[in-house]
Image (cartoon, rainbow, N blue to C red):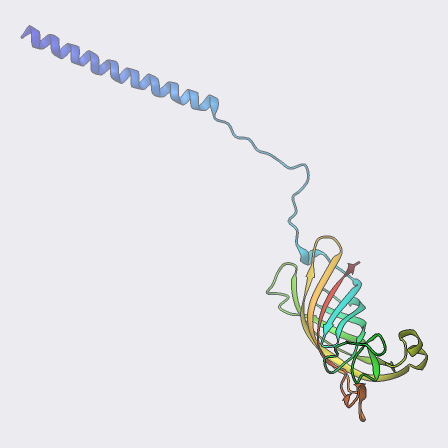
Length: 238
């Protein structure tokens, strides 16, 4: 009986020692966490403001227009006046050659020059357009992408000079015609950081010449100097 009593006492001492050790270790662990753990709050020196292209208000813009059409490459300029962020009044023009069929140059061994067979006139087109553009989905789309539609009207200058004359000499015999027309367009405006602006559009010009038309290639008169034009505009807003 004494042996069993001693064994029970020893087990009791072991259990009590274990409970006291666990309690002390837990207390030390809490103190350790309180001493080590901390919170750091960083405050910027100036308020952080997210970039929002819609807040970049532009009153006017101007720049270079690059036009691609069936007649080749054209270069010009544009000017925009912003009534507000969604409504724009614009003016633009570009100059390019004009033709209604492919014109391929061939080497003439008799004259030692490049020629286009049956070509009788060099034709040049300068459409001057004044119009109105409206930004679409202004309340639905945010960011720098701004789709738009536009409508424009104005005079077009058409220059013709004889192909058989040299390039500079031919301008002494040039004839100028003025025709009225217009265009409709759909495209997208892009506004980036700073004051740079850019847009891409697909335009359809209607520029009737009237009468029997005007010939670049003999027997193929042009009665309409319009058509589809892809336009890339790059400029500066202020």
